[in-house]
Amino acid sequence: MDELFYTILRAELWQQPIGNISLTPQQAKDFIEEAKKQSVAGLFCNSLVHHDIPIGKEYTLKALAIVKKVTKENKKRNFDVAHFCRFFQRHNIPFVIVKGQSVAALYPHPDLRQSGDIDVFCGQNHFVEAREQIAQKTDLQFDPAIPVKHLAFSIDGSKYELHRILSIFSYPPNQQFFNEKMEEALVRHDEIEIDGVKVPVLAPTDSIFFQVVHIFYHIIKEGIGLRQLCDLAIFVHATQERLDFDELQSNLKKIGLEEFFQAIMSILVDQLGLTLRISGFTPRTSTLAKKILKDINDGGNFGRALEENRILIILRHYIKYLPDATKEILYIPYEKFTRKKRGLTS
Image (tube, rainbow, N blue to C red; front, top):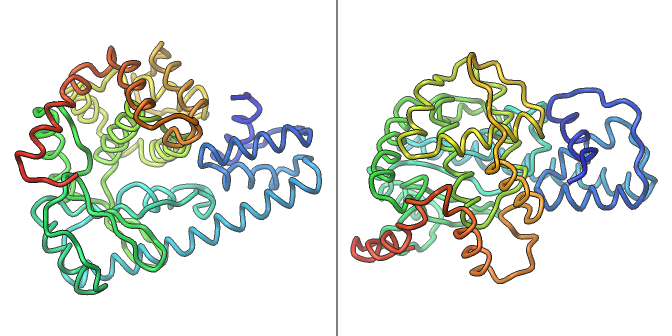
């Protein structure tokens, strides 16, 4: 990906001046398409417009239209998050909102982050009650079987995922450790305000731990876009003074992700311009970081830019990342087999 693309994106992330830049119409077209591919179009196009970068009338209008569309979607998503939170709070169901709007709120311009699903984590002990309350409120019909990870549904045009577990590990000790940490996180949550409602969210150490795990699993399976890395960069920037870095490193080491964390953090610093203020920590650029960055550039968000059979993409990723995630990848057949024995749906 062109360094100029990152320069324009960084200017929006950190509200920095970028000097005199001009793009040819072809560059403007290519960069806007790349921003769409990476799910950062709202951020990127706002930077083009805000910094008066000459791109021609056609692409200026296109950039403005994208900013307007993303902003409208975010307002709808924020309204839905606030409404959903009030509903769960009335029924005294413990929950946190993860990713998505909970991180968007930390951006310089929250309405410019491309929104997606609304992810709600209620834990294993409250999942059935939460599902029943949603069914009663919406008249949606849900499969009575317990899902492995989450229940997906839509209300008024917004997609939701109700999570009993936030990530699926193939190696059982990693799954047990992660589940225990996330159940603890459900109790010691933070709060942010969205649309006038206090929304429970993961505390900084727990959120970064989860975000790294989430990024890891998408990367080894199919790929991930810059949106998720921008989220992590913005979150670390906003919360690093409150972060228990020793606990975070200990948690990541326990599940074998310390090298992966180093690789991701080096991309956030080198490509996205994150300034770290964590004493004694300087992420190392590595072969793994270069491999991840190439996959991001080639595949975009969740590898959707790759015109290949999804199964082939997944198999190729498993082979590519086998040296970096050996236990998790080798234990995948075991996890699939025991899932059926536990009576869980996919």
